[in-house]
Length: 285
Image (cartoon, rainbow, N blue to C red; front, top):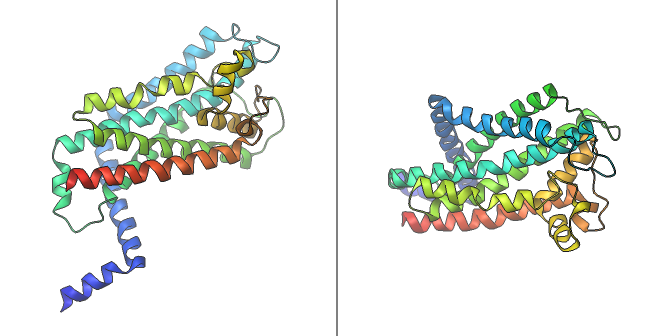
């Protein structure tokens, strides 16, 4: 009788939600503990964006035109929003590889034997990846400050707007980890997941306003860049950080970048979480 009562309680929508959140947090804790025991995972994830900051700042600074100037200081402030956005989206590859590794090692079968919410495995993984991304973003912001990046160089800003900018970046990163989750479930090996998780990000990040002023592009390419969800996030961060290079395009995402980033991110989460959970259930079935 007790088992029947527990089953009925588990089917109540509110109880299912609580159970799903609880199970997701347990899985997230498991992945965070694993990351601390393999510190090179976090270390390598930090080194790459730091290299991008240094290379783009000192190699391309002074040679790329922002607006009507090629001043290296202006480009430095222009660049950082793009580097931040690139960093959070490149976490997709880590999510894909991690999930593919768990699948290959049979972790899915182990979780199948437990009375837990099916979607909790993926949600817990993406939450843990979000925590790692937040640490990486914090370190990257410190490095950016050390090389001379400053907020409020083009227009006044305040701490609330700056925090909002980083919040949008984390939301974008979380959305992209669900793309990584789907990729990780769709391939056979972690190596394939790493390649599949990163190769498509290069056109997404480079055909954008992240590293060059989109007004310098040919009209058809600029149109693509202006409607790129990645560009909307970069535009939003430049506005919130008060940095130079804010696009004057008439495209809706460029005119309303904060709302565009929120809508794009929520849409990506809704679509790819649904597809990933469905794929996971099929793989576990």
